[in-house]
Image (cartoon, rainbow, N blue to C red):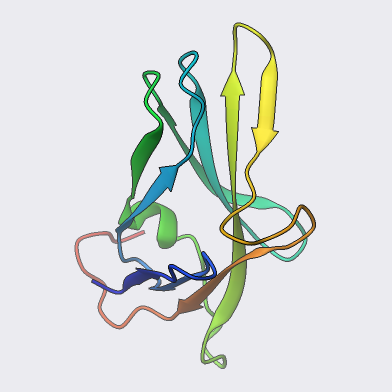
Amino acid sequence: MAFVVDENTGNITLVQGDSGEIAIEGLPTDSNYSVYFSFYNEKRIIISEIVTQTSSASFVTMFIPASLTNLLVVNKDDDYTEYYYGIKICNENTGYEDTMCINDKDIGDLNAVKVYPKKVEGIINE
């Protein structure tokens, strides 16, 4: 699988159109929270987003489908393109929203996603 999360930095390297998983730990357990995972570009425009529920668990594993990474386009003249991702937890009952810092990153740091061009079309023909 060509979807790798660096355990030290939290940065992701992937091939466009490949699926993968990301584990998110350290979530509050006092209530059920919505966990949002978004890919965005250098202009901070969201390219794709998924959401899951914590069910009061301290961790979730999010499956990132190929249909989402397929939207991360690499120009034909580039070896790769860099995108970014963010994770936010929300509680609709309380209005609580918190953007998570990944690993040792600080509040202003970016979570990088290095995307290499797809090599094979596969089953998704978008």
